[in-house]
Length: 398
Image (cartoon, rainbow, N blue to C red; front, side, top):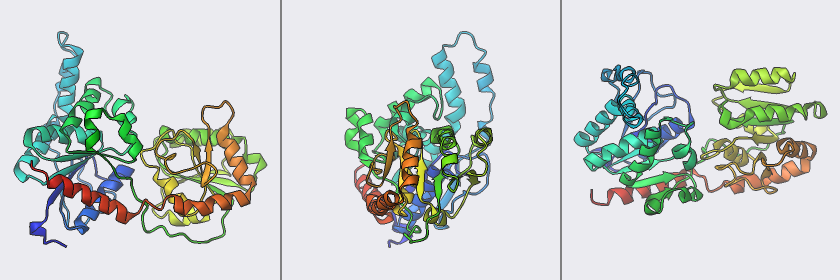
């Protein structure tokens, strides 16, 4: 390992980190630890009003800097909304600057005075800021994308709904030294001029998950945030058509989120309280995968479906929708799971679950194929890919 004083300096940038337990925050902290262990000097930059620590642990060898400052408290938004002669475009730009201007100034100052060898920004709210700062300071920035690009850059329902922000997200990509995506197929969304900068690095399955042979329970497991994109409401409705035919089976969904109350109401409406259980957050998932017979993931889309990948690694067959990006890349119908056709009028999710619950031999056959189907998603390959990318970027002249 290199001496710290001679190590290349990598700055990781994320907008919010304090106390947040999302997948991107987890990747941010884990990537920081991986790069420290690989001999880099790592600085974790974030922009949080609260001074609480990260939910996930960060190596004490990594520096952590909160760029937030009191200067963000302004009344510009109220003024702009009541100025009649300003165009909508100028109002939107002014509102964007009120929300992001100080963050941008702080990042530019950090880049200018600390001159990291490379910066890695996580997700569009940080990518835009890092790339604008890169344009003025010459800093090399790797912009990462942890979801489906179309959703991150086109959808008004993700990130800032402002048309100005959405346009800016796209325009600043030209300042990136590299653009990270999760799967090679995600490259197709980006314009031709950016294609040579795009690098696909999938996430990895934690080495803590080991394949253990245990007696499987009549349990359907789901793991994820209780949010609309995960589509657990459909899972409740599908189970309502199956529960009476499979009284010795149950569903457990592990996770928390904004849709929890709505899901509880739907479960109560169908009187499924005894067989459809919202189990809350679990820090140890290995025992849950080990006892499940089926993993159900009805999500609309994913960047990288980590929980279904973990389930396959643990030998649990997966039921998902065939159009679910970020899952269909490694779940193959009839090989390691069953893929339901969302476009059909019948409840194909219920059909797939019924088929697997009724056929133990099929469950075991699909489960046996699971580990091999996700064998490429290792920590060592993830580490190697990131080190190779950082080295290739830092060897280029500024």
